Structures are given as C-alpha cells and as structure tokens.
Length: 374
Image (cartoon, rainbow, N blue to C red):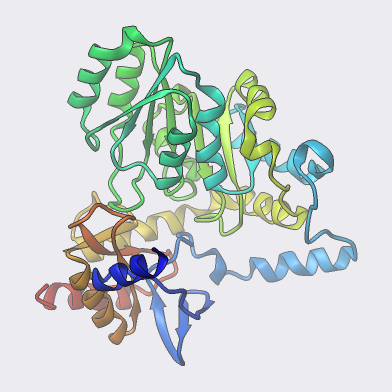
C-alpha cells in the first residue's frame, strides 16, 4: 500500500522531498546556487539584523543558560522566562492573559478540543489552517464549515443551528496562509454578538506585521477584545519558536488544566523564551518594516489591498511545478503549493515577502511574473 501510494503521488506531480538548504538572511543556498528567498515566514527580516549576535553575546557573558527544558510546564519546565514572556504578551494585548505553548500546531490542535463538549458547535471558515482542522477533528463538538469569508453563509448556519447548541464557536484566520486575504472580522464580530457566539481568531500570519505595534488584524480593526480566543505563532514574523493564546483568566486556567497539547508537551528552552521576549519589546519600533512590506507587496500586485502573502495561481500541479522551476532559474526561491495543502485544481506558487528584500529585485520578480505568459 505504501509503494502504491508513493507511485500515485509521483504520477500526480504530488510527491514531496526534503531539499538540502542553507538560509542566510534574505538569501537561500541550494546545490551551490544562491537564491533570493521569497518563501520565508521571516516577514520582518529579523534574521538579517545583528540582534542575534548581540543576544548571544549577552547570553554567553552570563556563562549559564539552558539550551533545553526537559520537562513539561506542569512538572519542572515552567521557568522564570515563561512568566516574563507571558507578562510581556499580556502587556502588549492590553492586559489580557497569555499562555505560551511549543508551536502553533499545538495551540490550534489543542484549544478547541479542551474548551468544547458534545453540546457545542464549531463553525469554521472553509480555508482555516490544517492544524485547526485537526483540532476540530479531535473535539467532541459538532463542526460545520462556511464558505470562505462568506458572511451570508455563516449567518444562514447561525440562524438554522444556534438554538440547538449550548455554545457556538466561530473559527477563522485573520490573514489566510495560502491566499493572503483578510477575514472581515468586524462583520464576524457583529454576527457573534447577534447570535451570542464565541470567536476564535488565528493571527499567525498577521502578528508582528499588521495593526498597532504589530498586534494583528483584530487590533487593527478594533475588535481584539471581542476575540474570546486569539492565537498567534512566534515562529514567523518574530523569528523564534512557540506560539501563544490570548484569552481571559478563567479560560487560561481551564486550558492549563484541560489542554492536552500543553499538559503532555516538553517546555520550550529558556534561551528561546528570552529571545522571543527581546523581539517582542522591539515590535513597536518596527513600523518602518511593516510599511516596507506593504510597499513590496504593491510592487508585485499594483494594489494597496494585498498583503505580504501573494498567491500566483497555476491550477494544475505540473503547471505550479514549472512556474516554480522557471522562477528558481531566474534566482528566486518560490515553491509550488499543491494538494492537500490547497484544494485540488488550485495549485499555485506562493510568495512570502520579507521587509529586507531589495525593492529592485522585487521589481525584477514582478516583471518576470507579468511577462512569463502563464
């Protein structure tokens, strides 16, 4: 069965391998060639800064630091660095409670299974991330999907189903990872209030990049406090590791006691927690980087309404692979995105911009895309 499946994946142009890569700032090296990296989630270009060197000099001067944390947070892993980082996040999010976990996947696959029961319903956007889909599958709650960013469909489901359940959760991303478009959070919040629901918002691709001080789309649109659960990763724009949940004190306490992906996971290394805390303190001063991202996006799309994630649609797998190959020949590392990451027939290459990319190179890439005849 395994061999047959692998043969089928190859026949469908859907077979993946792990490439040997080396990343140095804005550039990526593969098989002796240097590429401009247009596939990184380092949106603010932090790996191009000297901050890591400064940080390591400080750490080495202390002559005592932990590169691991060999226990869960509930046993011996809840180091002082956790308390400091969560206090920083709480201050950033206007005093709401923060809870840090090992990754965005652990958060998305763990929160809703902990908070929901058989008496509940989850209404999720059709294009939510795979990690959140896995969380829905692990939950005992009923689940239905509404068409992507379709408020009318969402309201029809609410009118039909709300009275049948004790609690109804609406789950969405703020910036969608494969399409780069933005959820209509204000309108979703209005429906949440009208139908007495709870709201879960994944800000993984917006945190650090959008909103006042980089707090995300919910803060940008003024609905941050209407999000019962707001989550984001620390491994994208923050260039670190881990993820966090923003909620209120009772929910945080409940998650500590019921969230399996927290209870049964090894804690993060203190050195990573300290690095994250340092970057978070610098977020307010990075408005120039956030503006540069918007400028670079405009160079490719010609519009002010695009984000730092830009899909270039191919349709079929073979076409996305060929597009990616031609872009790499021109010196740009852009990878094909295929099923099951995206629905069948909607293969694409996806550009992920970083604030430190040279504008002249992005202009050259835009011309390549426009003139390629795809």
